[in-house]
Amino acid sequence: HIWLKDAAESEDAGLGERAKRVPLSVNFRPIYYTRPGEHNSRVHRRIKTFDDAPFVSNERETTMLAGTLENDATFEYHMEINHRGLSFWGEIEEDRKEEFPTFFSIAFYSPNFIPNVTNMALKDIEPIVGDGSLYIDPMESKRAKIPMMMKWDDVMKKFAGAEWNPIKSAEFMGKPFGSHKIRITPANTRDMYYRWSKGYSGIYPFQAIHLVHSTEDSWYLRHSREKDIDYSKYKDRGEIPKNKRLNVNIIRGRG
Image 1 (cartoon, rainbow, N blue to C red):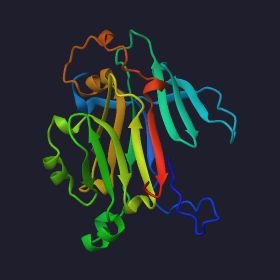
Image 2 (image 1 turned 45 degrees about the vertical axis):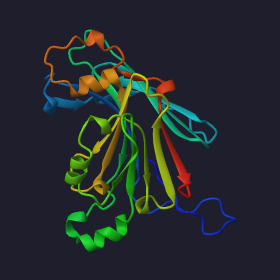
Image 3 (image 1 turned 60 degrees about the vertical axis):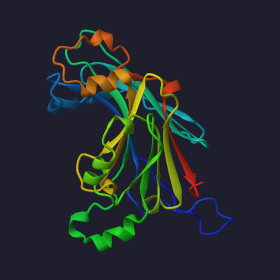
Image 4 (image 1 turned 180 degrees about the vertical axis):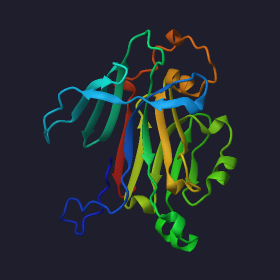
C-alpha cells in the first residue's frame, strides 16, 4: 500500500499526519489460464514460500522479495524507494515445460474512495470526490482528462478506440488525493504495454481505476483468444526489467 500524508500544519514542520483516506496500492501479478483462450479461466498464481526476509532498515533504498510460486517457479520482486519516488520491477523463472505458463505484470490501483457509496446520495458523494481526475497520455493521441465523477459508461463511450491505450504516463490529482499529484510512468515503453482500465466493479472511476504495466508478450498472452499457443515465441512474458520499471512519483502541492 501507498499511504499519503496531509500537508504539515505549519511551514516549520516537515510532514503532516497520515491522511485519513483509502491507500493506493501496487501489486505484482503472476497469472495463468487453466483453459488458454478463455478469459474466465484466469487465475492468480499463489506464492508457496518466501526466501529469507530482508533485514529491517531505514537506510536501504532497494528491497527484494524472492521465493517460490505454487508451480515451483521462482520469483524476484524489487521495490526501490528514495527521494525521487518509488520504482517496481521483477522477474519469474519457470520450467519451459510448464503446462500453464505464467504471465507477469505490475498493477497500480486507485482504490474505491467511498466503500459505502451504495448507501449515499449523489449530492453527498460529489463533495467528497470533487475535482478528482485521472489524466492519461496515450501513445497515439493527446493528453486526456477522465473525471472521477463521470460514469464509466460515458467514459468508455468517449474513450473508445485504440488511440486511448496504450499510454505513456498517467497522473491522479484532485480532492481525493489532497495536496498531492501522483504520476505513474514506465521508465521505458519500448516493447512494453502500459494501459488504464476500469476496476472490476463500480459505476464511477472513483470506485477503482487500474493501471497495468507489462511486456508486450505478457499483454498479448493475457488477452489472446487463441487456444493453441506456442509460448516459446513469448520469452519476455515473465519479466519487467529494471530499465523498464514502473515509477511512481508523488508530488506535493500538485507541482
